[in-house]
Length: 81
Image (cartoon, rainbow, N blue to C red):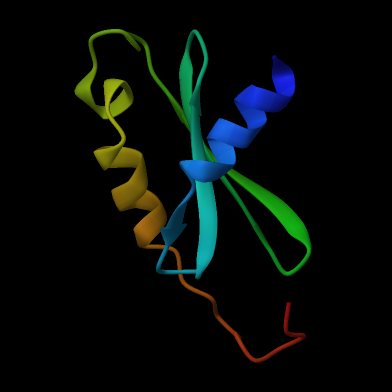
């Protein structure tokens, strides 16, 4: 069951254009997380919500994707991937 879930997650992966990396959005009881890997390291952008079931910034993907889309690489030529 776990392998099937991870396989489905990989198929749903989208690319965050600002850093040219695939990302995954997950939700917990109090947060929405957007995670991606770049330059051999993992990164997580967490959005904590007081009302995660009703706050539109947490119930949908648009807000956290918009935040992550504003990330920039300050020195993209340094070190490669």
